[in-house]
Length: 267
Image (tube, rainbow, N blue to C red; front, side, top):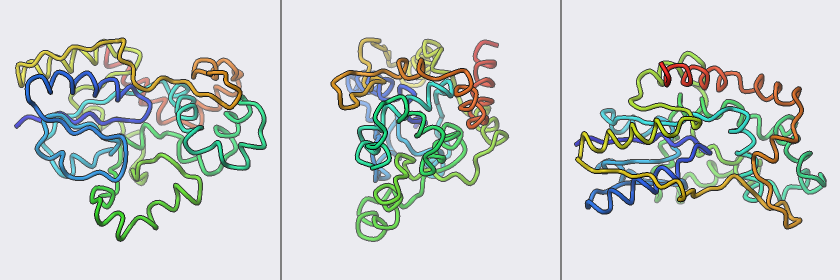
């Protein structure tokens, strides 16, 4: 059975991709496993399409899976991550409450908050490492591991790594993985990615997968308490040239990986 694993790096349009693929598969009675939560389980082993925030872990279980992924421009990715998690993880923390305007909250998150240094090069992290296997057994997770594994999320403020490890993160490993994957594009050229995905399902299952651009699932915008909706694009405009350069410096592996994918996707 041919299987396609969408290695869903957070904030790379994965829910949009998954929703469109699932609709087409459902119409043909084909099963998929799609998750952006934890803990997960091993039900993905017999599905033709799999999409999880799990890094390389599905390949540890089913090494024969084909792999597709999307890489996002690093400044956009980091700012979008903040815009996504603020109302999920940051808003109740005193240091963010004490900062009155959203621009300064963003800069604290990017440059000063020690709990979120782990988000630097997070795209490479997902490309190079597997999720902790304990997060794929929901029964044991809650009975045995929940306190240990959830402490960083609930007590230390280190949110949204989805238990993906970080030991193997490096530029060399990222490039090797990119070269081994079947479909890799940047979010800038999601059109190429969609065409390649459609070709894969047509070739392997004679299924026509159609992407509807109107079905964006996670929009990059948040309400920061004053009723005004602020988009990722709005936040990026508040950053100075020096601050943007600092983001690129802090995320240099993601920068090199992104540039590598941009080069090969048009070659």
